[in-house]
Length: 519
Image 1: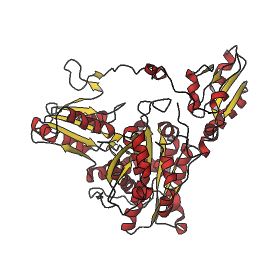
Image 2: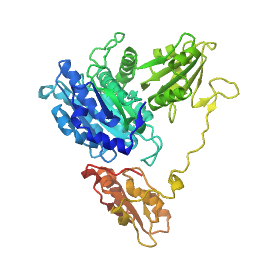
Image 3: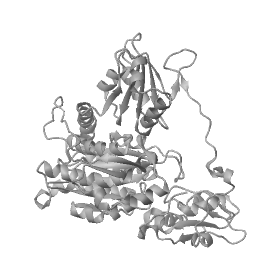
Image 4: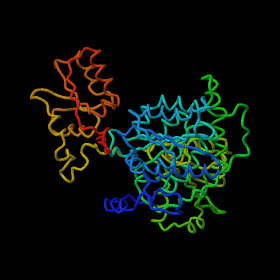
């Protein structure tokens, strides 16, 4: 099981040299999930070299909203990255990072100028970055990947709104963009599924989404780093169409859409099926009750079973079958039907909104009624009505502004932080908050209320000013956010002709090795 790292453990890990973590001739190493994400392109590069391919890698994302410190870990390992032809260049904002990674696949349009056989790519961003990059992700995924390229889009989800203004679940956004969604359950999974994600991306021509959460990506574990650990099986039951599935130019948008839905998605499903990425991990001859889970929820399920004294042998003896899903969308039909066969009831364990549950019910819909198992998850049977049921109502989460009241101390600015004074406003004035650690002023005595999405700072005043007796408004805007997209908010306010003063709060998060978290 993965365990979140304590501060002491993090410091202890810093003593271990980067050579120990990123050297490619070691068979096992202790690392965090973030470090595994740094190791992944080095591992893929070596696998390609062993197969006789000269490839390189390109990584981009927005450093102002990093995925668990991924950008900092990449800077730390810059010598190892350079030695292995891995280039890391941050984007000004998230969607421009997507666009740059998309460009790495467009080298196929100028084949005579290629220095490498192919370039594989990684894009990273927190949940808000996934949301705002939807248009770029749709375009890039529809265009496709290179034969020896392939792309993984890493989404850092904050399920409990620990360091974001909103709780995030990126699955639905990635699905809407057409990306298959991998969900690693451990540090080892990050490496293993990362290799599969690149291979699936190359085989199908799709970008591969990979969802990560803090409890996995910031955990530490001893992992196997052997380049030959993962064995790739290319599907034998899928025929490639004439012209292939990879990026091309020119390309008709409607033809590209049809190719994605009718050929590329089935190709991805064929890959998932051939490599058994979704599989039973506990099964017996007399199973009657099934549990299906993915990612962190899978690890939590294993821990819950252990706490109940239900090890694998006991589960088999009492008829409990456990199915691990590594690719939550699209859910591969053959494996889940095999899992459901002979079961009376299935419990779906997943976080936030349901992803697996609805797909599972769709797959089982055509089962004979007398052989179809009840499915329980976010929806629970009501009054013996079977798997139809009602949405399970949970107790609403406590207002996050009140968290920590038990200690009588809410988060405050660090000593010497310029925001401690720059967020003050004249008596009788009020301000609108912005995204960044200075957003903490909403619970301080600073006459400051509300916030917006990144890049919308101050624009709500445009919708208030015509209807308010107040003649003027202040808006806080971080310098990193200004560089990211906040300049558009300033232009919008000027265009609307509203009376507003923007205070550009200088802390320079985009120019240093550290970044300010969102509130």
